[in-house]
Amino acid sequence: MKRDELYDTAPSDFLTPEEQAEYAAFLRARGEEDIALPKPLSALLAAVEVTPPSERQRRDREARIIEALEEASESENSLAWLLPSAGWARALVGGVLAAVLAVAVLLLPSGPDATDLESLYAAGSHYSEIYGVNLQEDLAEIVSGSETSEEALHYLVGQLLTEGNEEYLRYVEQSFDLLPDLGATDEERSFLGRQLLEPRG
Amino acid sequence: VVGVVVDEAIHATLTEDFRRGAETALPAAVRLYQHELFLFALRMLRNEADAEETVQEAFLRAHRSRRKFRGDASLKTWLYRITANLCLNRLKKGKREALVEMAEPLPAEPEGLNSLLDEELLQHTRRALEELPPQQKLVLTLRVYQEKSLQEIAAITGSALGTVKANLFHATRNLKKCLAANFPGEIEP
Image 1: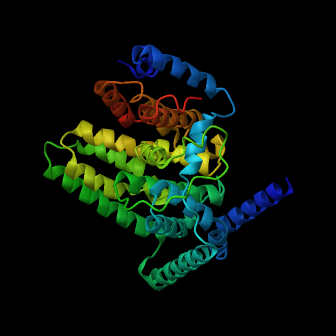
Image 2: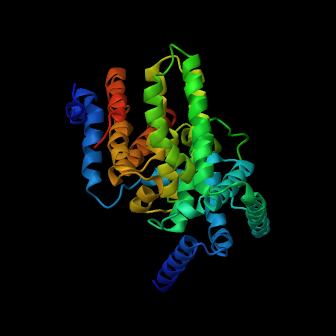
Image 3: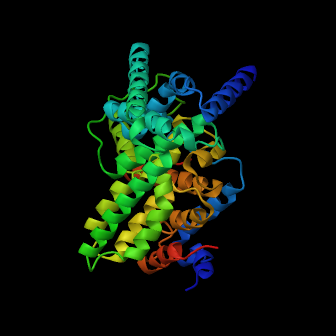
């Protein structure tokens, strides 16, 4: 099945009649300004709202965060002479991580394919650094915890869905978010996973 | 309207200051945004210590990545995004601990709902929220509790608008399904 065929698969192929009606309502709602929650549900959600902290707790927390920032700045300044440039430091960290990843893959001959993982790693490391996601940690878990390449890819794709914002990730995001709920098979999801790894021009 | 315009001007100035590398920008952002971000993290994680740690880490990451900030989105949106990703990481890794104390039911509920708002139903609602897939919980929290527009949620999550609507739709449907199973007929629109 080609990517376009999968992307255009009708919901009726996956959903029960009741779910189809619900999905049709959803599609209509996509064109609207907003999706309103049923009033009783809104009231329930309001009733389980968290208790806001006191003004004092708020000020104390503010002070702790500012103190942590000041410590980070001081620590950064004291280490500045060690780092010729930010680019140099990043290259070093990237190199070490890539080496760790390569060794981990080699140690697991039946595990994920090294090229696949490195492609995903390259796409994801940028977001890891900037947006606060911990892809490095995830990678270590994935490589050691996945039995098959597909399993690792599915997990990684899931990670990228929530972490990336580049054009090509949007396609996967739009597809993957919907497919599990629409009852896509493992094979179909696996297909999408493989599509992710194709070079994009 | 005037308040909104002033707020927007403050956000824009702060964003530009931060982009230019002004040292005062991030502490100012802490004063302006940490409370809102903390409540957001608390709603996601339901644990005060985790929420504070997450917000502090978000500001530290913003500090470390400050030279990469291009100002495509506002500083506030960027901080929301980092916080959201950190919350998702925590949820995925199951680091939640004890639930925080929840507020008592609001005194003035819409007519006919008083009988609904008993503790059993509230417990089911909390559990249903906890059991939502993290991405759905994120979008629902941003929409319902943080009162973000769908466009703002798209910017925070880095998702297409359609994806945000899809997640909100699925979150609502999952909550309704979960609650309807225990309280049939009570939460239909």
